[in-house]
Image 1 (cartoon, one colour):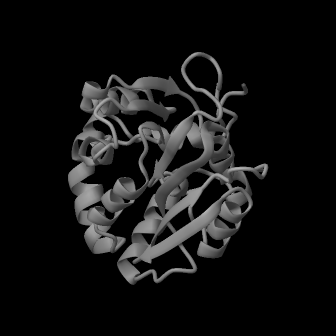
Image 2 (cartoon, rainbow, N blue to C red):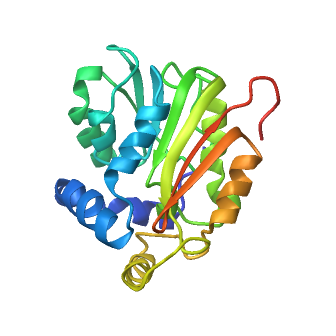
Length: 231
């Protein structure tokens, strides 16, 4: 597996312990409600609808939603995947009651499946919440996340998440200005992310696709086909 490019490393490096300590309040509270105009309850609802007993989380953040959602079993099989070791430590600690497995990896590259931690075709659900807008590249590059999700899911399993878009959705002035700042600093890479491109990438791999737009956030959920090949 080749090392992640510099822009991937730079983008995830901003999430140190200090930033993560304020993440829930600033990003999931202030920014989501007042700038991106998608209250965090809508993302939690997305978890409630789609999360399964065997779940993989791509880009774990602070594990805010994993900590609050209701799994369909009291003993879920939970796997956390992130490139940033600090993020992994913080999120794994928060949901330690589930004894999560931890995988440090770049979700834009093929994941280390079948290494006794990640298994192909095994999981009921894959979450990718507020991840895609942080990843560099075009939709064809970011679609590696969906390829990894399809590889991880069992037939009929669910992929879900959310992302901040710059076009194809209503973007107000505060959101446009903050996106510009974050893109300039390499925190966001969503200058070309549009709703049609997101839908097209999902259409290539999944069925039962649902896209809900709230402000400039697209919440998505979809199913891995039971019989057809993906990819």
